[in-house]
Image 1: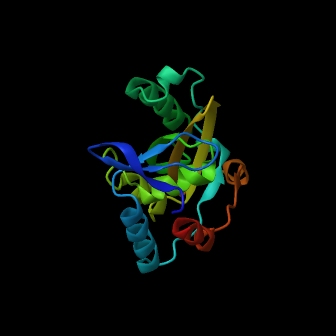
Image 2: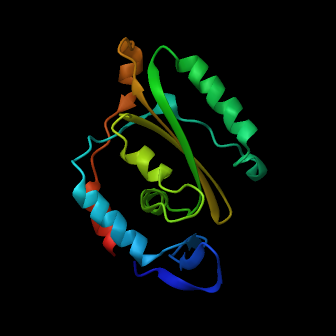
Length: 182
């Protein structure tokens, strides 16, 4: 929390800024209060099984910055991905983040979810018990980074080839709690 500052040019929904090293400033609605609420929430829930990182679920971020947030681009990319993997995965949830060039900070900001746009949905996707897998891709352009995350779980009749393409990802929740409280 040492990088959260009052926004010198506050606007509705951006009273605070995350101004950490190596990336652009990130607008925050509630700042320290939202981080404390997130810590309390994480302490109150049952342990969640670690997500497995899956190359199959990786959705390539377009090189053109202007396409990063276009709904029609998402629809095309996700439609193609789901069509190719329909028999292997179910319960898809997609989200993206544009901002920090540090993937760890991006993940923390998505779990804290302190903005007016997503209102808790990014945290809910990451902490959902409906997903056991995640594909993550990112593309950096200057000081901005775009991260796409596609969550899913295996269909019951998944082939052994697809099972081998996933890798186990360790559960870093104690590290996450430490980072949130800094």
